[in-house]
Image 1 (cartoon, rainbow, N blue to C red):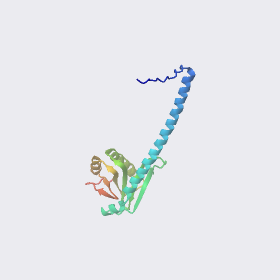
Image 2: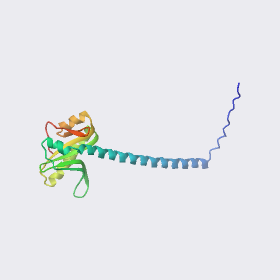
Image 3: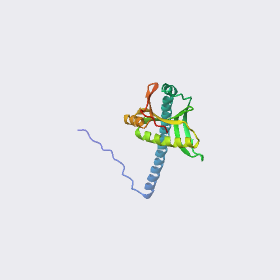
Image 4: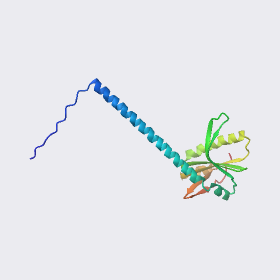
Amino acid sequence: MADIQVAETPAESPLTYESLMASIRELRESQKETDRQQKETDRKISRLGSRIGELIEHFAAANLLEKFDELGFEFDSISRNITIQNKRKEHLTEIDILLEDGLFVMVVEVKSLLNRTNIDEHKARMKIIRERANSHSDPRKYLAAVAGATIENAAKEYALESGMYVIEQTGDNVRIKVPSSLTYW
């Protein structure tokens, strides 16, 4: 039978106040570094999320003028990423995509995953936008649309029932679902 050798471990040094405080300082420094790394990771994820959002908006905006022309609209301008403020320069809301002509304004909200909550948020946004249009004596009819890279079926139905157009991604193009009855905001 082979001899078994047991490695001796040095006896643990006794816990002293100084060694405890040194361990606490080391732990604090380690936590600071972990916090710094977490903030950097969060910043990178946020930047990536922003870029993904921009990409989805870009795809949603592609062909929108043409597609709405096919539905009988004659939008002559398209704008993206508009901030709406009041007279005191306070933020009221944001618009992802805005289509306009002399008679109509289409306000499009774009999401990577469109859900029912997003529809409710867009309804609230539309009320704010309509109030601001009224304060500027804008008589045009305001319409709402939602777009998503992925759209939950329940959200699609809810948007259509709410009188909103639904813009779906179909490869390099978009398809627009028309509500059975429109809501003018």
